[in-house]
Length: 505
Image (tube, rainbow, N blue to C red):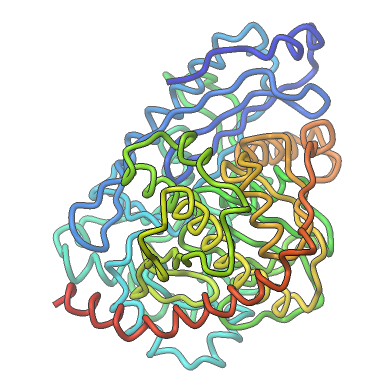
């Protein structure tokens, strides 16, 4: 489970640390956690994975107890560290638009519906149709769509499909909020992670909650991500240590990449890809999630539906380890006549928000081998990111020249170069492989009152080790193939809609 290996260099330097913190990230496929601090670096780390279950078409479920068991495993490992006594606070972050329906005690009543679960798509379309677009923009401050992963769509789906679960539901929680409830006994969330439910004043938007009368009583109270939610209860490790409210993984990873100021941009690559720009200039645009201003940060974000998950799927299909699949391809495998890949294996989010779209390889012939297939997949994921990037530039009213790049997908130099070529932007890669956990640690240090700003808290924790620049000679080819990529989506759209609608009947 955990790696258990202490960073020896950090241990030698940190003989008498003043303060350490713990950051825990409940991701789409694993729990990642680190113990460390600004100026001290990473002292210990933990990582362990859990499955996603897909019992029927459109389903993507996880068991909340898996998250809790592994988070406690991380805390147990860190509690055995020689410097555990210096831990001052714990921060949590998690995947969002993943929902846990719980009883009055916080026990889950149903498997968690992850953000990849599209079964509430029809309910989302029905709810969206009930709200005047201009009124929704006024309520939320931006044209944020109600899609299959929206909390209200999930409530409507549970109520219609599993009325016995709905009748017992007293709390609808995000993964980090579920863990906070289990570890501290407090039911609290944050306004940033409550995507599509919160308006510019960082309170729940009444217009949205009125659609489902029970929603207001089921959603937790909101508090600032940098406030303390509660303290760890016995018998959990680190009992008595405060836990920060925290926020969603994209924001936490943004902090973990060192992106905290106006005009700075990120490209987070994990199970899915998320493009983000901090900009006070823009007022938002359709297809992009524009968050309310929080402590001077107004984030325009484009979360796609697939990133590393596409490669995970292909590796399983080929019966090979991920590292072996990554080693097959290079940028040279992408030529004018190469196949193209539409990475919509679970539909697509920003900027298309099309749960009915599906994946496709186009342009296959008998000369195509595994290397060309892998390269096409990497390029297709990058093209989906380019769609999101261009949309967030419109949303934020700023041109992006360089992005801070991080996450598991940023560990492949080949994929980084393909992304830089496709985007036509510089990618500055973070040294840390766990930006989400790093950001949670940063938030814990601020919640403990021992750091003065996000910028200060990231110093000594966030470093960049490589920069990938676009290859000038590939620009025309990338632009041409990107145009065809967009055409493929539109051409296949009626076919994919017909196929997915037949599955839902």
